[in-house]
Image 1 (cartoon, rainbow, N blue to C red):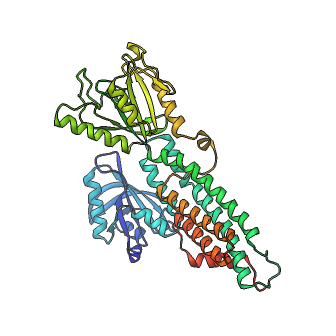
Image 2: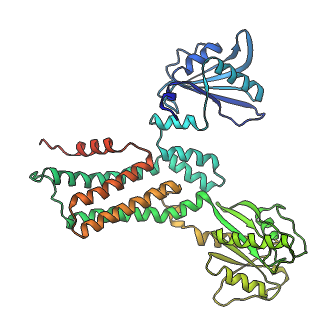
Image 3: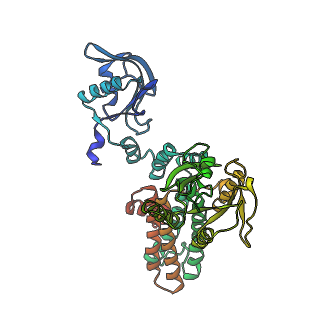
Length: 453
């Protein structure tokens, strides 16, 4: 986005398209209040020095477009830290479009996707982690996802990252003084022996964050789960039972499912991205062969494999092929059709026994998924949880920088070489928040030491 565009006034509908009780039209920019006041028939909006709500009508010349409620948020007490006006009009798509058209004719520009949040970030209202959390709230499909997104929006990630940055700045600041002012007696004299424990302490906390981020990423993105098994073992019945709807066609004819059927399941707060696959066997025709190949591809891509076995029958050759094919994957063996018998027992293998037809044993399956993927201590902890892939990648880069700094100390390299790695670590943490770099770093260092003392 061009920086100059920040100075114009933007408009967009903030509610979803289509018919509804009301639509909200949002306007932001220096001229937002005066622009709306010019088309608003009611009490003047120009005297709102703090948030205010006004009832009136939007007028296109002498024509009434709609009866509305207008909410005014004067700068800087608004989401974008600009003047913001929200028009609550009736929820017809035509009337809201007419109001937006009128505002465009008066000088507003139609906002780009995400531009209000972008302005909030550029104007310092939120940082990048909080901006990303807003989208996570919108996209949330489980209570756990929603809770995680709200925690990030509250500033928990920002506070944790800033705390790490502060500790790195303390180390960098002392290094700077040791290099530039070696005669400065009041500053701690740094050696590899004194510097390494400081780096190790930060590294320990970085590793703790990365450990908990595994759970956070699963909560945010879900678990790609492939349901596999021989033909007619009950894969589609299991999918339907989990979803509590007839998503997949179920028949007694082997090979009914010939393509991958995808669905999302909120399993006790954890999102499963389910894939019901074609039964693996020697294909009888070209279409079925393609379905089997896609099943094998789904196994490769899956985070979790639910291998369904028929408890009413003994293991077959196809079962053994699938057991071998998935032995290196994270998997759960699901013994289905327990209502018809219990014939399969595997040495050193745990089987979750269910009846998909009768919907029994599904809670045991849900508990097994949580045990495999979710660290309950992380969920119950008050510590912030990283979940965003970008954040995790930057934390991993930070870890690498700190490990390089530690190696420099251990090998006795000049201390300014160690400082380069520490600065890179600080930079990567700043990139998580989307902050500026060098000037802020220098200002922070000089604010901590009175070099003219």
